[in-house]
Amino acid sequence: MEDQERGNHKPKLGVWEREVNGVKRPTIMLPHHLVENILEKLPVESLIKFKCVSKEWKLTMMSQYFKERQMMFSQRSHDPNILFVQTNRNYWNAPTKICVNTLTLRSSVFVKSRSYYPLCDKSFALVTKSCDGLICMYGFMRWIYVINPSIKWYRSLPLARFQNLVEHLDTRRAPDERIAFPLLGLGRDNKNGVYKLVWLYNSKELELDNTTTCEVFSFNTNTWRNVTGSPYEVVYCDNPTYVDGSLHWVSTVINSKIHIVCFDLSSETFEVSMKIPFTTDGQVTISNMKDRLCISEGKDMKQEIWSLNSGKKWEKTYSIDLNRTSIWFRHDPNLPTQTITTFQKNKILLHSWKIIGHTLIIHDPEQNSYALAFKFKHRGISIAYFPSLLTV
Image 1 (tube, helix red, strand yellow):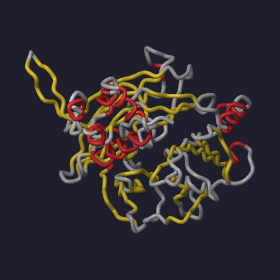
Image 2: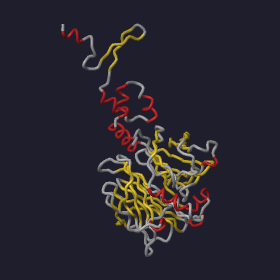
Image 3: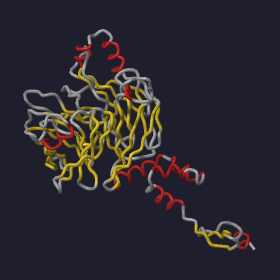
Image 4: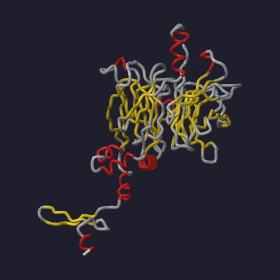
């Protein structure tokens, strides 16, 4: 009798009978851990829709554990998407919104979508490089936001001291005396899993003591703190580059040498131990390609890209003909390109040397070819990111 009563309920093996057009058909219910394994492999846009399937699915996809597993699978298995953020909104039809274009690398076709963020009423916006699908948009004064463009989520963050200093100084300086602007870095403390922002800037330009000043924002406490800065001044032409728990900058030239300045997000300390693999009198850029720190220089109409391997040795990985890329970018052929990402195994997506531009080029090393990938009407910043469900 007890077994018969159990037969009226869900069987242990997850086999149900449902009636379709008057006919009873068996339906097999997968164990939830198998459902999770399937879901984490789906695109973020599909996961957003599938939250409506059941309360259990929604709770699963809202858990930090699932979000991190989905993000790691995406990074291992797919090419990144490209964000193109239009920086000067004086030209836009929607002057109080930031326009973000998403390019999806599918086969040889770039699929484009567009979204707007009503973040502020300022006329200029900058964006950090991405970490785990998150980015930060900010102005040098008065505003800063963290954004997940995949799920259209964002929130405002407290201002850094730097932003208040800049606003105060710029009101009493002539336009030709105003300072160059350092760029904000975003990364993840691999030890504690805490996401952090780092603003490293040269002190003398803001009439401060020490060589550099460093502010760190921790998302778990929602506060900015000052930490000991870098012993070397840094150049401002590149976004800080995140690789494996650390942010990296290029130092200014000292005694005809430059250094890579590395900030460990766990210990919150700087190291300046990396020797670059070439002597330089040209323009140097750094980037993250295939989870490796890369450095390159534009010189004699050629750009050689070196990557740091797991043994902390530099390997020459790419060589770019700057004479050919300068046709699209319209700048000095001795200036290096910005390497945005690799995709389809070995192709490289290139951007102008200037952090702000409107043209993207594909370089295929195997074919030694260069082709126009996309050209936007307005100028902006291009960054690679992996879609995720993460929020902070």
